[in-house]
Image 1: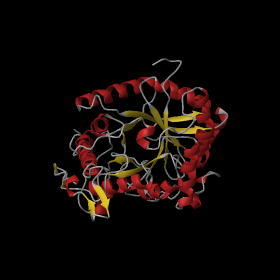
Image 2: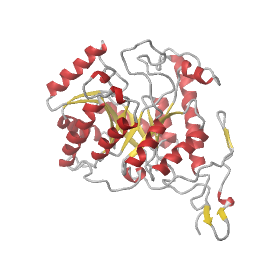
Image 3: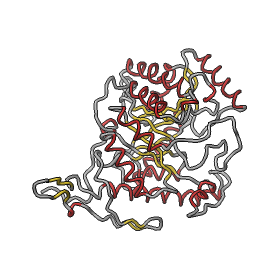
Image 4: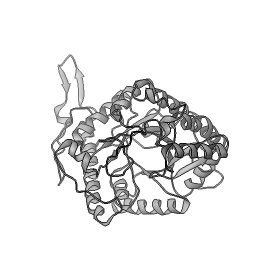
Length: 402
């Protein structure tokens, strides 16, 4: 890839409440009173679409947000509570035309049959712009909401005892995705006849049992929802280390990774590509997006001062699971293009304050990348797969055309 004419970047934004900084709700642009209204989410996604972004992701979980990784907290000075991400996406879909909608689902405690029909329905509602971000939950308290299983308490995600638990949860997630994908294919594309004259609505021979059986799931199929418009809505996941890297390699169309610097980005890309080859998917497309929390202002000193003010309100410096970028849209464009050279095809930006930083992305960063020839100037596809350059896959159960 030439350093003077890099491939165009893909850009997404990750929406989480009023923003990724825990004090974001206290900023003037945050609109905390509107957080649980459809209009709030519609406005954010409309702004993202004005910036021609590939897609938005919508965070979700199965327990209240917490300042602790694995346990609830007692804080009352941070946003707590969410709307359902899939339902937000379905509500927003008719109000948008081009941008992809990628809600988060926690696969540890939700059945793949339910997720398959929910995301297929979203794909119909959005006319081919649905995706899904799958995540696991290792929180014992969230398991207790359902009462169907118990999870052992682990001492942090990096502790020695955690690896066996996490490996099992990510193996389960891979099986979950496989079931969902097979259910999406369980109706052939032309299974619906809808012939009033003959009275035939469906060709039963073109509905298929998937007969999936593993240690985690036994699912017969077929789905109750016809094959989605995209055939297979893109499956995405966030990964920080080797165990979840294998989930990306085995199951995903797009992975979000969190490198701190270009050398770590190269190492992550190399590891994921090796895992992809080991999974027998070396020839299949797999996008890797870098995740960044962004604090953007027209002057770098303003951005630093705003971040420091937010940290003071929170009572501690913000350190999340992804690196932070503090500066101007032009500086961010430089940084993204440098990281791109490590083999990343795009970025998922997390606005520190949604009401402030999202417009800095769409009205500052995007025009700067366009001036460099590094980002689209118009939407050129009608589906999320199309925006990502992914072909519509053949149905695994359909007989090959003669």
